[in-house]
Image (cartoon, rainbow, N blue to C red):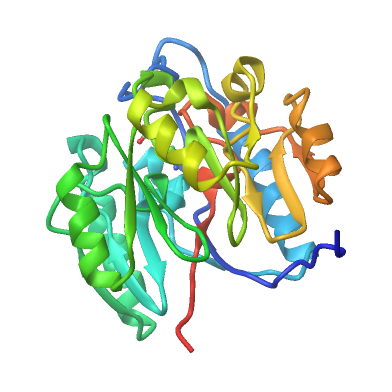
Length: 271
Ligand code: ARG
């Protein structure tokens, strides 16, 4: 196997200045369990500095008071070939994030439009080399898959999630390189599992423990894979394939239902 290469990426992150769990829209969120904004901030900062240290370009969007989930910037949009399809959130609590993202893109000259169907950005839309993998079942609706296919002019493979702990595609599946993925089969419907097996026969399969610590909510640059340090088997499975796993502690932000990947939106420029 040739040595893997990291490709420099461009990410958008949002500092968790207003992070708290004041409502519950996924099974991880328990408003009666105390959260520490300070710890959340420190964990987020470690991730941020790690990405910068790996020579990726990281941009920031201003956090908005009253929008505690804005730290999960992956949900704000999906960006392919310089075109951003901005989220339309399912829950009222997150609806006001969309205009903030739309303004951010437009102010910087990116082509951007808000999705018409319910679409939670890179939470549910993950790009591989030749197909966009799109989740449904809890958040983004199937119509959003057609809308994305049309907007990006790319084939979209729809996948159905069936376990509410894995309510976004990026909690159950990660793209590691152009056509390599890792995922937790039990999070998907039988039909979707078949589709994944057919298309990615060599995928890394995550066990129940590693999925439950959000080990699949990972950020890969083609070589380095940043993932929850609580994952037990995944680091070894990744090393066997020539990747370099880097563990991070995101446990405070997991109280909101997100990990490393949720906190990073990839900005894919056009040619
Ligand atoms: N509390 C947020 C929500 O439920 C967490 C989003 C996590 N982001 C992600 N990309 N999975 O919407």
